[in-house]
Every structure is written in C-alpha cells, then in structure tokens.
Image: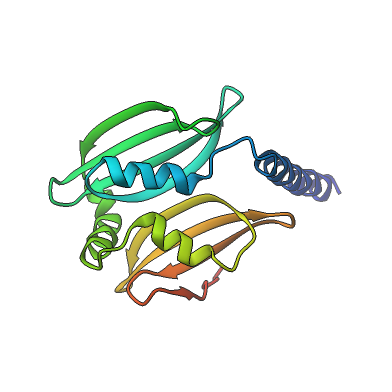
Length: 173
C-alpha cells in the first residue's frame, strides 16, 4: 500500500511539474529557443548538437552544445531565456562520448541544413514547446530526438535527418 501511495505521489508530482513548466512557457515572457539557436548558428561555426532548458536559481536557462567537426571542438553555451543574454560559454575538444553527435552534425553540414531548421520541420505539426533536442547516430541512422511539452504533458519525437521525416519511437523493457 505504501509503495502504491509513493508511486502515485511521484507521478502526480511529475505531472504537476510539467503543467507548471507549460504555464510558465505559455506566459510569453521567454524568447523562443529557435530564435536563440538561429543567432548561435549565425554567430559561430559548427552545428548545434544539443539543446535543453532548465531552471537555475529561479531563472529559465537555455543550454546548447555546438560541435565544429572540422576543428574537433565542442562549445557549450548558456543563455537566459527571458532576454537571450549569453551567461556562459565554454570550449573544449570532442570526446569519444560525442561520436554519435559528431556523425549527425557532419550529415547536417553536408546537407546544408541547420539544427534550428530541422527542429522547425520536425515540430511543424505540433502545438507544443520544445524542452530538449539532441542529435545522435545509431544503427546507421542520424536522427534528432526531441522532447516536447503541450497542455497534456511531455512526449518524445525522433526525426530522421537524412530523409527529413519522423521516425517511429521504439519501446522495449
């Protein structure tokens, strides 16, 4: 009985957090992540490989990773969501953990696409807020995994970068 109650409290807490985030994003007080992405793509060489948003000290912050495959470099950025002000920028080298992202970033560059453009294509039929996006390459497919939030809660999408189409999400235990 206690485990059931604990599970119920955990699930209701997650649902409440998602609704709270949805209300906050619906207020219109924050720059759309796509506009910040487009500015990064204009100002820096490389391909954005990851985006996520999080609360830091009561403030919504957008975090990005930009990969420059030619320079074997990765740059991490943090922007204040309210006004798009750059808070942090840290450069480093690509590591073995970044191989999938690098492969997908190379494909985007080869196809003369942008991370923001692919996100726009992937989300065009969804009335939801983007909360996370990440490039990856697995099983011979370069794809973008997105997490979206709408008035019913969070959900995921996968988008094939090469064929520019949504992929079915596979589920397993």
